[in-house]
Length: 112
Image (cartoon, rainbow, N blue to C red; front, side, top):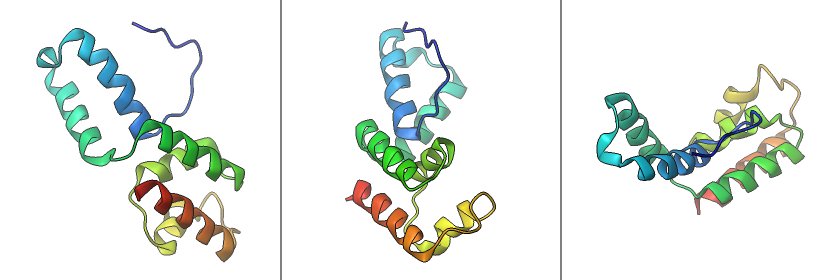
């Protein structure tokens, strides 16, 4: 098993990819109930590749978002400016309409 030497923020698709690698080696049939529930959740809500997810996180960070917030947005199925505003308003109360539109564009690109 790979040992992680530093903590990093991961999006749901990246977590799914890592867990699949680990659990395939151990045998998916041997998962605990909690592990099965986690995998079911990730399968349901991680509908993009880990590579696309990481690229989107980087693009969102280029707009000035923290990595944690960017990864959160990638994991959500946001389609509207109001949804982005709800998710980010407390941490980023001064984002412009243009920035919200750029965020929506990035998130819609990874879903296509």
